[in-house]
Image (cartoon, rainbow, N blue to C red; front, side, top):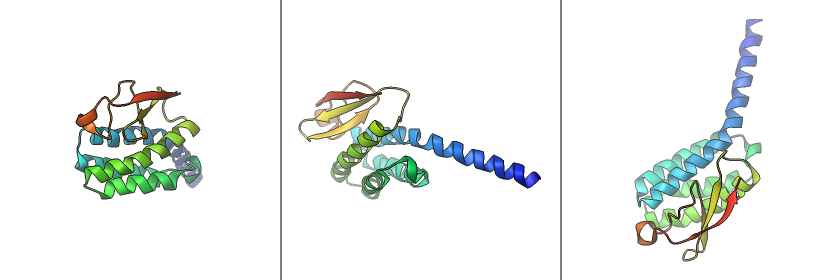
Length: 149
């Protein structure tokens, strides 16, 4: 009888963890973006590694584009070259935008930004433009193209 209670407890815990995992992806994505914004390849690689771990731990059914997310986050995590990381961040952003539009990743609005120089998008938690593709060289280059709620 005690075993039944323990198993039920674990089953409920696992379900709760799975449900909570998808929303945790957005803050991890933001931390990669912030590292690229600051021009810190080491932190970008570390945060992308955390994102890869979260994606691997997430329920496959809740993230339809998991392979694309893993591919780009993995390449950022494996690189120490800022230019290469920023190239893969464009692909990661495309995948995150698709996920944000398909699933509710945040209770707060998520802003889709566009960089005309890079011809790429990214997500932000704030309306102010802080371009991760060029960092301090072109910090305010870009515009808000959509608000995802």
